[in-house]
Length: 101
Image 1 (cartoon, rainbow, N blue to C red):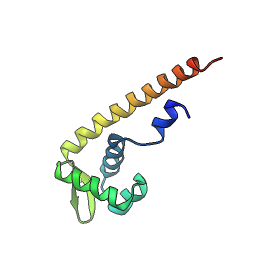
Image 2 (cartoon, rainbow, N blue to C red):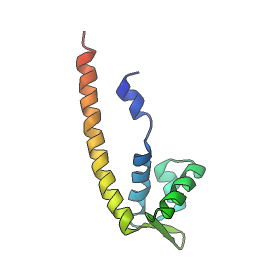
Image 3 (cartoon, rainbow, N blue to C red):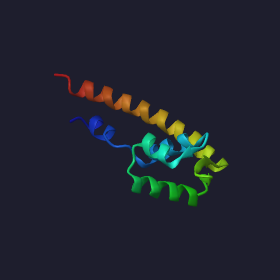
């Protein structure tokens, strides 16, 4: 397996946080978060608790919403995702060139 293939297999912490925050933009039930983020119940609870403690999301009547701080982080993580994608394209090109016979 290529280096790029190895790093693409796993989502990093910031991508998971992005996934959760993006779902909370318009309010999200925990069951929606569970299905849309594809996390285990235990891992989702860990992230949600941590994000609430950090003031990134808040809960009202069973739905989770972004705070101002959460919106700011989401914008920053969107930039992170774009740059990460660009980096993966560069790595892919390097592997193509390096592995040419």
